[in-house]
Image 1 (tube, rainbow, N blue to C red):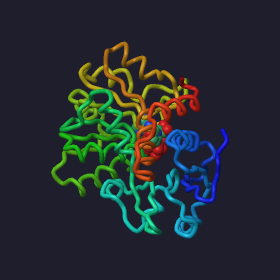
Image 2: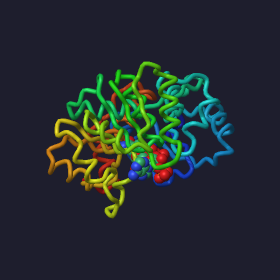
Image 3: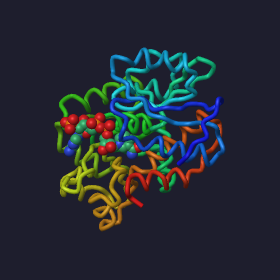
Image 4: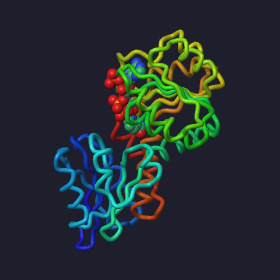
Length: 291
Ligand code: NAP
């Protein structure tokens, strides 16, 4: 692809450590070109200790917008001029808009998640949700459900204390929300799975062909056929979990659309235009080898 870089070309970027694996440049540059926007998207590997300088650099160099990835999503927050309500609740920013030197932080993962469910005709309002895994993606998903008046959220994690910390944080933010840590309580997990409207795989399980399912077969059996399963995994054409859901006639929502729509929202924030979404999806699928 050839870019016509001009004296007016605006720069959007990704900061992370590392960043060389990212598909965002391909996805955003294709969308910028398609929309005839004089923008270019590039990756900057930024070491954790250099975050303050990197953020000052956005202002100094008039970088128009940025994405932020692991491990900087939390670290950038104190250096921004304002942070959206969602991003503040999640405690992590994945998108920055530079408006005349004033930096606003957003988290577009909740939008990506909600949009992917909407596309599969799943209504998030008032549902019982079970989230397996309590890392970064689980946090955004949990806030998404809390913001749409979840009836309950149950969270488990193998890492000691991680689900407990997320549960405590959700209780502080949403005192009337029924939210529980089932990490050390298999009975509670089973009961929660039985009544769940949606069960979320927010673990890395499924990225490799040899991975086991995120739940054992007894736990899987507890999930109602009327429930949906959301799988954060996006790099596999057809996961073992997807095949299992198909065999049990359970609605399966894969992670690709969440990834796509968090990018779509970032594009809209930077440009105030709607990108060519099918093109962005095609580029992602080509890059992932999941076409
Ligand atoms: P993370 O911060 O490492 O969190 C994953 C958590 O799951 C860890 O705390 C891990 O614990 C826990 N875990 C692993 N196996 C488990 C099990 N069997 N039961 C319960 N908990 C378990 O990772 P992340 O950033 O949240 O990402 C999770 C997955 O989502 C990754 O595969 C990532 O590629 C994907 N993702 C998708 C999108 C999207 O847009 N679709 C966006 C971001 C991430 P341990 O540390 O003890 O292993």
